[in-house]
Amino acid sequence: MRLNQLHILEALGVADAPLKLKELHERSGVPVPTLVRVLPRLQESGYVEKVGRGMYRAGAKRFHPARHERVVFEGLGGTSFDQFCDGFGPVLRRAGIEPLMMPRRQSPATELTREAAREIVERHELEGSGYAFFSDGVPGDQFTEYFAERNVSLVCVGLNHHMPFDTVCTDFEAGGEELMAMLHARGHRRIGYVAQRSLLRVPSFRARRRGYESGVARHGLTSTMLFYDHHERRRDHNPVTDWLGQLRAAGEAPTALLVGGHAMVADAVAAAFDLRLRIPKDLSIATFGRVADARATLDKRLRFDAFESQAEPWEDLGTAAAARMLTRFAVPELPPVLVHVRERPHPGRSVADISRSS
Image 1 (cartoon, one colour):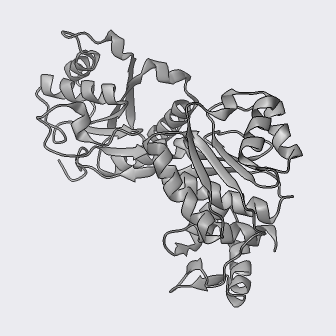
Image 2 (cartoon, one colour; image 1 turned 135 degrees about the vertical axis):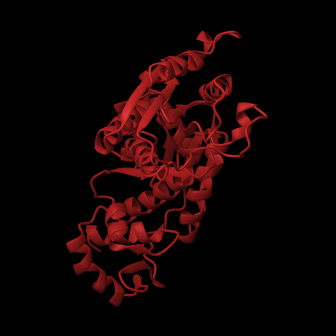
């Protein structure tokens, strides 16, 4: 089976619903003209089914790689781990593989020694099988070379780098652009950006900020930013209140804030009430990261349950990592790829639509 066909089947095999040509192109990376040429052949062989006009889904005949008895995923525990496993496990089980999914206290990539890699392979009896792991740091050469020597297929989750093995990560930059597009569509033209100063060193935040700035430029928005750390907040001093007050006094008040982090969201909500601004009628608030639950701000005056937000798509990351592992098993000689997964928007009632207001 050819490379383009594998990428098509990989994209369709993990999709929850039929895909249009454009969606299939975005997920598989296969050019649309190639899709138009290849899809009929895959339909004839039973791998792909056409649903309606220009919609495709996986067919009754499934492509299964050579059986690998062992696939292990190790990642940091918590809600994100559980959500990742919800996506990772079912894809492999449909291929006849029961994965072992284990939480760790720290990323294995923080242990950059060959000895650590040997311990993982021997502990899980992984020779000739597959290992997926979460890492926000670049593993050392000795760590990864040992897996290659033992014929272990690697998939790393979290790294936004091209590596000598397959990697799957969130497309934070696209998420920032999509938030700006949403705010623009709802009539907001002046946007405020509030985040922890310490996040400026975090690669995922820097990518999201690039997307934010790109969206601001693309839609002709006006942007102003506030960076501070939560320890700078005192009981009688809220930096967001001071900042918003100064902007309002200058006639440059934003109609919407994009806020990151639970503590920053709580400060933004408190600032709105300090300035007698109603959320979302007078001031809209969108969030990024895992801040979706309005109750997390501990402010009983909020009259809605959820913030409009973008968050890491952990289940989708699990699905993409499992699909990548199966493709690697099927065609080991394929060059390693970096797979970007789009963030999931979480609808809420914290952003007003002011597009029709005078």
